[in-house]
Length: 354
Ligand code: NAD
Ligand code: IPM
Ligand code: MN
Image 1 (cartoon, rainbow, N blue to C red):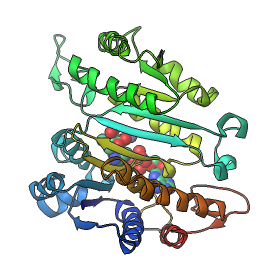
Image 2 (image 1 turned 120 degrees about the vertical axis):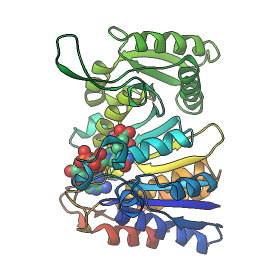
Image 3 (image 1 turned 180 degrees about the vertical axis):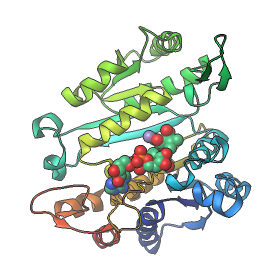
Image 4 (image 1 turned 135 degrees about the horizontal axis):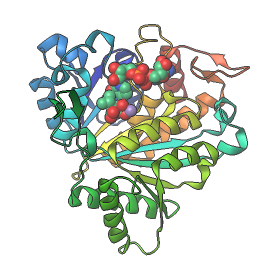
C-alpha cells in the first residue's frame, strides 16, 4: 500500500511526522506500507513555483492513498490566486475526483470537560458531516473581477451544482446513514438560493431509494445554531462545499478542539486523501504545540476507507482513546489536571499505546 505524503506548510510537517510514526509502528506489526513524500502548497510553490507541482500530482495519482498535513501561510497570502497554497488543495481534490468529504465529529468521553459547551450538551456526541468537495461556489464559473454598468469594480463567484453532483453526494449521505442511525439531515439555503432549491429536489428524489432513512432538511443558518444548541439531534449531515466547510469547523469545537477532527476525501473508486480539517496554524507552527491527533485519526480513516483494514483503524482509535484517558493533552485542550505534552510527545504516547 503506497501512501503519498504531502506534509505542506506551517504545522503540516510536525503533525504529519507524528502520523507517520504511528503508521510505521503498525508496519512493524505487519501492515505493508510504503511512503513517498512530495512538496505541496507553499512548499510546492517554493520548490517548483506551483502549489501542486506536476511531480507531486503524479505521485498522488499513482499512490493508493494520500496523507496531507495542511497548506497556507502569511508568506503566500499576497500571491495571485493560482499560485496560492490553497489552490494546491483545491486542485488535488478536483484532479483526484474527491467529491465526498467525510468529517466525523466524535467526542471522546475523556474530553467532555474540554469542550466549550456544557457536558450534557456534548457528551456522547457522534455525528458525521458529509461535505460535497468538488463543486459549489468553490469551483463554479464564471468568477473574477469586472467593471459593472455603473463603472464600479466588483468581484463575483458562481454557486453551481449539477444534478449528477448532487445525486452522488446524496447517495453517500444515505448510504452512510444506513450504516449508522438512519437519520440524514440535508443542509441548504433553499429559502434564498436557486442552487439550494435544486439541491433539495434532488435529495428528495434520491430519498425514494432509502425508505428506511429519516430525511430532514434544515437551513444552514439554523443548522449553525442547532449545532451548538443541541448537536446530538444529528446523525448524518449532508451539505454542499461551502456550508460543509463552515459547519465542520464549528462542529470541531464540540469535540474539544479543532485539532481533534480528521477527514477522508473520497472518490468513486475508493481512493482517498486524508487530512485534518484544520489549517496550517501559522500562529503556532514550529513550537511543538500543535495537536497531532486529528492527523493521526485521519490515518485511521485511511486504513478503514481506502485499505479496508478496519481492525487496524480501530487500533489507532483505541490508542488515541487510551492516551486521552491517561490524561495527555496538547495545549489547545485546556483542562485542569491534564498532563501537558507537546506534538512529538503526543505522537510518542500514541505509539506507546499501540
Ligand atoms: P487554522 O485551522 O490553521 O487555525 C485556526 C486556529 O486553530 C488557530 O488559532 C490555530 O492555532 C488553531 N489550530 C488549528 N489546528 C490546530 C492543531 N492541530 N492544534 C492546535 N491548534 C490548532 O485556520 P486559519 O488560521 O484560518 O488558517 C491558517 C492557514 O491555513 C491559511 O493559510 C488557510 O488558508 C490554511 N488552511 C488550510 C487548510 C488545509 O490545508 N486543508 C484548511 C484550513 C485552512
Ligand atoms: C478545508 C480548508 C480548505 C477549504 C481551504 C484551505 C481551501 O478550509 O479543508 O476545510 O476551504 O476547503
Ligand atoms: Mn475549512
